[in-house]
Each structure stands twice: as C-alpha cells, then as structure tokens.
Length: 238
Image 1: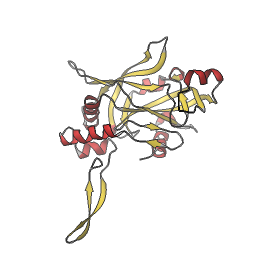
Image 2: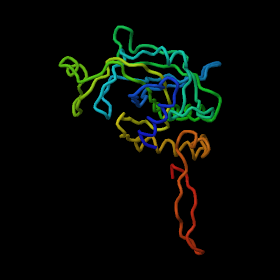
Image 3: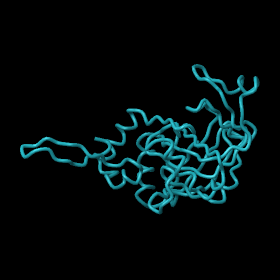
C-alpha cells in the first residue's frame, strides 16, 4: 500500500466528498496506553502534533476543526470503511498538554470486541505505541511566515508549508507507525515494531487473518522443489 492508495480511500469518506485537496498525516502514537480497568477497553494516545511531516508541512493542531470527527466518532484501520475494519470509536478528544498550551490532540478510543480492536490492543500493550493517521482537508494553508518558521522549524528538516486551519474528518489506526505525505510518499514502521508484530504472531496473539485486517496481507513467493517451481503464500511478517 502507498500514500496515493490512502488518499483514494479518504476521498470515498462522506466527510471528504467534494473536496479537491485531501490531506493525510500520521504520527507514531508514542506513549499510547491501554486502559482496561473494570469495564473499560480503551486506548489513550496522541493523534496529531505540530511536527513537520514528509511533505515538509506542519498541520497546526489548534487550527483543526474536530466537529465532524466528533460527530461521526468511528475509527477504522488504514482508512478502509468496511465493518471488519472498524476498530473502535472516539470516547473523548482533548487539547494536549492543556487548553492554553495546545500542541497536540489527545484521544481516548473505545476498542470494539473484534479482530481489529484486539490486535490494536495487543500492539499497544507490547510496544507502547500505535500508528495513528488523520484525514483532513485544509481551509487555510500556505508558505510559512517568519514567526511560523521560528515556532515550527526542526533541525534537519525543511518547512515549506503550514496548514493553519482545516477540517479533521477521520482517524485510523495503522499497524506500523508511519508518516504519510499528501504527495504520495510513505515510510513504514521501524524494525523494532516489525519484531514486535512477529512476536505477537508467534505467541498466537494475532493470526494471519487479523494481520490481513490490519493491512498486512500475505505475499506470494516462488519456491523451487524437487517436482518443480510452486507458488506459496507466506505471512507479510516472514
């Protein structure tokens, strides 16, 4: 899967219909925790920050209108909207670390009792993070001002564009932490996260069918045998 595939999926969302420019930006969701005390089955994580993404762009958290997302509330896997891809629902969203010092959005997500929800929970418990990707469309964006450069520039990164205001319409989990560019570039998760996913599979906490739900499809390989060459399927984590 590449970033253009994600953009095409987002365009099918009711919140994106009629919009010419669709943006997607992902975060590592570091510091994610599971809260399953009592009757809770929740994930708490940071969904959006003011970091520069792979498109050399900053999406300012305080400029995002969350009203559509808060009304819709459903949270999917990899921006796909079938029933088996629905992993949870938004319980609450808050300005982080505080309303006055708003540098990110913090979300509490109630997980569904299905393969996608259980897999997300297992990943967070094992790694303390989960990929989170938001779909939005900008209503005010452009080249950074001098003040914005001082505020948002990071060492070793170029800041070319700032989304000052936009409408956040969707949030998805991703199996691997990733950053996604609106222009079609994407990098996948690091080696540590892959090792964690392999371990979860070996422990029986996620199976191949669940990995397919998470977007980690099996792959075909050609194997030379005594009887000739055959095609077999192997896990995406093999």
